[in-house]
Amino acid sequence: MDSLVRPDRYPRSSRYDQSWVLSLDMGPHPLWLLEDLMRDLDLRPGMRVLDLGSGRGATSVFLAREYGVNVVASDWWVPAEQAAEVFSAAGVGDRVEAVHAEAHQLPFEEESFDAILSIDAFEYFGTADSYLPYLMRFLRPGGQLGMATPGMTREVRELGFIPQHIRDVVGWEALAWHTPQWWRFQWEITELVTVTSARLQEDGWRDWLLWTRACPEPSQSVIDMLEKDAGELLGFTLITARKNRSPG
Image 1 (cartoon, rainbow, N blue to C red):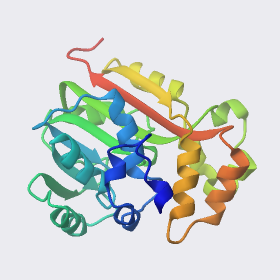
Image 2 (image 1 turned 45 degrees about the vertical axis):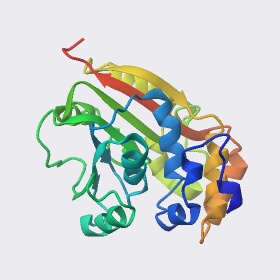
Image 3 (image 1 turned 90 degrees about the horizontal axis):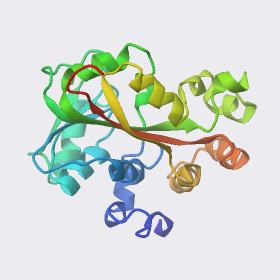
């Protein structure tokens, strides 16, 4: 557990009880990804932020506590009542609203958010060409968009196949894991946003491996995949953008 406290790399996340973060586990360390992504964003107290694919709520708690924003935590897999209990116990129930919603049927008013963030979820719903235009309905002009998602150093389509050590663990889902360059083009070609940062997280695969080993029921298949890959192909793509005030 001590290895998960890394103030040199993640000072804000290191102040949190890592056993609490583990209890909300649904994949790679969500606070590490979010804290790194926040280097490229500018959230201010009082902003209204959509945490899209918020899971069991760790990222929403972090956003409310660390940045003083008002969060709408939207997830399809976790009941709103369950997430609300997490927020109440963390002392942010007055600043975080839990919503049960599917990412293609969001029940929000248009242009009602100052920022939309998504941590380790966008790969499940956001790769279709039509998704960004849909999502931008809910973001105010000039608003910020940011997401962290499993990424690749090369496109599967460029390779011509899914490498066996990745296929054995996630199968065809790897088709949704893209390079920063892919995401930059995918977003900017719409002329709806201007990408402000698109990068592969430094040593993201090592973070993923460290966290997986620490989980109460570590996935040996994921560990084997990451050890075999050793950062050759796998990591996390972090991308941020601002919604254009007019097309182009």
